[in-house]
Length: 141
Image 1 (cartoon, rainbow, N blue to C red):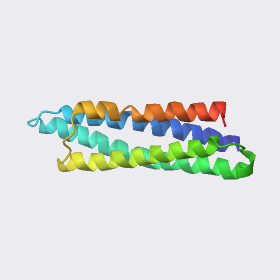
Image 2 (cartoon, rainbow, N blue to C red):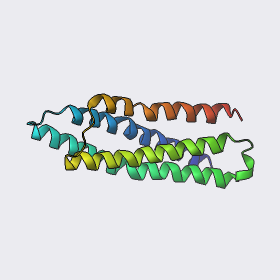
Image 3 (tube, rainbow, N blue to C red):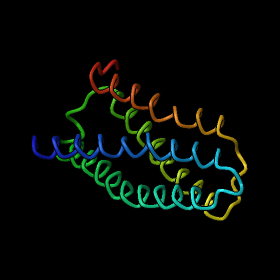
C-alpha cells in the first residue's frame, strides 16, 4: 500500500500543478488585446494541452485515493475527517471540470470575465489544498 500512497501523492502534486497554472493562463487570456490573435492562439494551445494532460492525472489521483481508502478498509478510518476530505476533493473535481468549461468558452470567444475575476478564481485550489492537508495531517474529527 505504500507504493499506492506514493503514487497517489505524486499524482496529487502533479494535478495541483495543473490546477494552479491553468487559471493563470486564463488570467493572461483575459488580458490579451483583441487584435493579438497569435498571442491568444498560443495561450489557447497551451491551456488546451495542459487541460488534456492534467485530466487523466487528476483521475489517477482520485482513483488511487479511493483505492487507499477502500484498500485499507473503510472501517480503519474513524471519524469524519476522511469524509470531509472526500467532499473537498469532489469540489476540486468540480473546479477542474469548470476549468474545462471556461477553456471551451475561451476557445469559442465567448468568455467575457475580466482578468481580476480569474485572479480570484485562481486562488480556490490553494484554499482547498490547505484545508485538505490540514484534514489529512491533523485528523481533527
